[in-house]
Figure 1 (cartoon, chains in turn brown, yellow):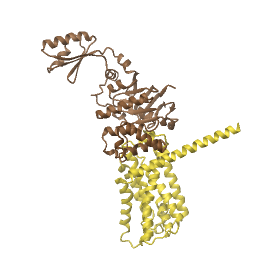
Figure 2: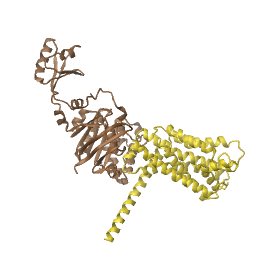
Figure 3: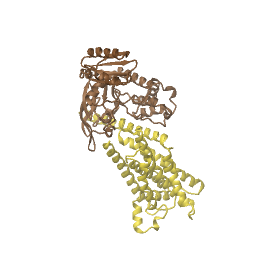
Length: 322
Length: 264
């Protein structure tokens, strides 16, 4: 058995609302599997079904070979879960939170204390172990939450938006920890809005949209599916207000997007674009300070498949984002 | 071959007993955590302690009944309110910050989780209600004349009322108020038909029949038997009815939470 997760026609209805629509996928043992999708696409509902919180309306899911419906105890023994909200006990200390988690998994006293100490040291919170976590920052609470997910000797960890809204230090610690755990053999199932993060961290990603899997593959192979999206990124020392419209008028350019102080010019042949942009800058006395040719990003794949630009699009089906 | 079958059966039985012990340990861990975390939360203090003591004082002050005779009323009220308040405080708060999901993703059964919650209610109810017993014996010349009745009163009532609270906590609210409100629609009317403020013997026959159906009636009566102030239905009926309610409430609390999980 090479698969850590297998789903067959996994489906979830909330009354008449179809949140997850007969999805089939496998995550292999030892890989970091990313689960991407816009708000309301069914990511959290899928995680809730895989972890036994929610019961599927139809279909099956196995985790480390155990059917989550038929053998929930054995399946849950294999997993650690970090939900989208840091569900820790604010009234308890960092130490007590971890020890209580150890008790839920029925770990012997000595083992749970050793594990708690090891994890608090690993996440840089050992010195503050006796403090109630209600005084902790959001990033520290997130670290405690991840530490709690690692208390049992799990084979797979589910992380639902683990770095969303955190400070840079916490994000780096969490990413580093996830990589380290994966190197140690742990399977990681991660949902994220951060496509760059998914591209950097995941061995494979699935893109889910409106409850259906739109694509599953390695990030690089997915990028190749939109190879037509070649682009050139340019930045001028000072950009005139009309630059966006001017650039759209240049020959061989299909589309222009303004991204911060830069312009991204999409074209079938970037070499033609370079000449046009150079002529435009000379003609308007603009100093070019950046010119990069870019291949398609995971974000391009995402936009191509879902039609949604993740950073700007309003959630359309928030009722499904449960 | 017979030897193998016996060995297999032995192994299965041993595996069940290991599982059972594990579930007990987890239930206890949940109860201990709830005690540490929620016993001093304002809604628990208000509905579990302040409410029954205030009700007791408002109905007893100025009435010409010796305090020793009023102690069973106070015991019954505190058992009733304190035991049934923990579930409605703990579960909605845990739902709100998603810590209840921790139990659903842990390798334990929902039964163990709910037993842990019920145990927290039992200990809270017994812990609060023992105070009037001690105060009655120490300061108001109450006497424990039937230890068995008093133990039955505490054990069965705290179990039944704690399970009642857990049952109501299956209402999908995220604040204690959302559960306490419907629960109080049940709890407060029961006070008036359970022989707390009016002796059951003084009620009309149809009211006596109604009071027989109230679990609180039997808590009051067992407390009275325990402290030697007499009852109406008799301790056997009290224990049978209260025991029956305990079983029904425990069963229904589990059933309702299972139904709730299916909707998740």
